[in-house]
Each structure stands twice: as C-alpha cells, then as structure tokens.
Image (cartoon, rainbow, N blue to C red; front, side, top):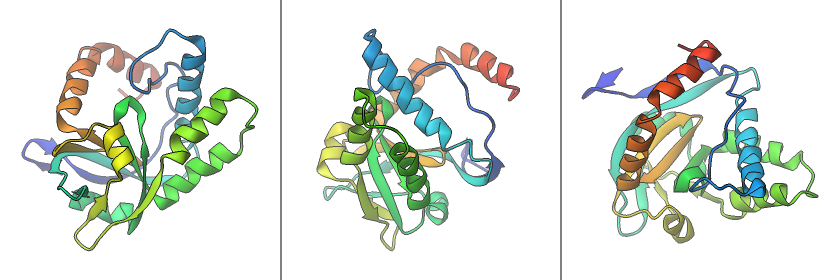
Length: 201
C-alpha cells in the first residue's frame, strides 16, 4: 500500500539468502583488523536469524515521529500488530537503536548463546547487544519508553525516524537518518549490482 508517495505496512515473505560479503560498521569504518572481525561477526549473527527457512513478517517503511520529554515514542500503527505488547530495545549498528519483537529477540539470543566466550570479539558482541538491551511494554496507544543510556547512544533528540527493516524496527535521530540516506544513495548503483548478483533484481 502507498500513502503520500511512501510505501508502508507489513508483508509476508520468505527471506532470501543473505549477502555473504561486506560488513556493517558500528558507527564508522575502521582499518583495525580486530574491529573489522568484530563487525563481520555481528553481521553474521543477524544474517543467521534470517536463514531459518520459515515465513516471517517483514516490517517496512519509514515514519517521522516525536520523542516526548518523558522519552516515550509512539510506534507506527502498521507495526504494532506484528511487534506485540512487549519489545526489546538495544544498541544498533551505525548509531541507531534496534527494536525487536520478543520472538525475534529470542532468535538473536539463541544464536549468541551458541558461540564460545573464548574470543574477545564474541564477548564484545554479547556485551554490546545484551548488556545494553532493555525490555519494555508497548502501551495502549503504541508508545515505548527509550532508556536514557540508549537515547544517549543514538543521540536522539525530539525528532526521530522510525524505520522498518525486515524483522526489526530501527530508531534514528531524524537528522542523522537523513545524512545516512544521503550517504548510501551515492552507492545505489553498487548496491543494485549486488542485488542483481543475488537474483533479487
């Protein structure tokens, strides 16, 4: 469905194979081999949750919302049915926040628990995603509470962007989201070629 020139809503699909190359930086890219290994490990964990061979609901679209002075944020109405009555909010990549329905968060933690704690990168991943995570209720009008530590991490001000990305919702400061979109739009041709290699386009 389209509204105001923007696609929104929830659609059913079966996740295709994920891209097997490239990494996603936590905030900015680093040339340190240990940092790059950490980033790759993070990306692999999130890819793994999409390769279960089951039908899932996809959250899509972007919305501009307001974070009130009590740190409450209303989720888009089209997301609320799939998200449910409780969610987990945690550190995301690229200085945004990730919001997961409980069932999706359980898949993430199950994958994390299946790895050894011997490697420093694995311990770092656990601390990054689990120690900062907060479980919160979705109230009767669809609002969630953003903890202070996560608000500070994502540098959220009053105006925020709420973005549906597959099985999660991302929360961005609105100005940072606009900068990010402008930056990745410069790589649109390269991304289109990668999707073509995957058979998506």
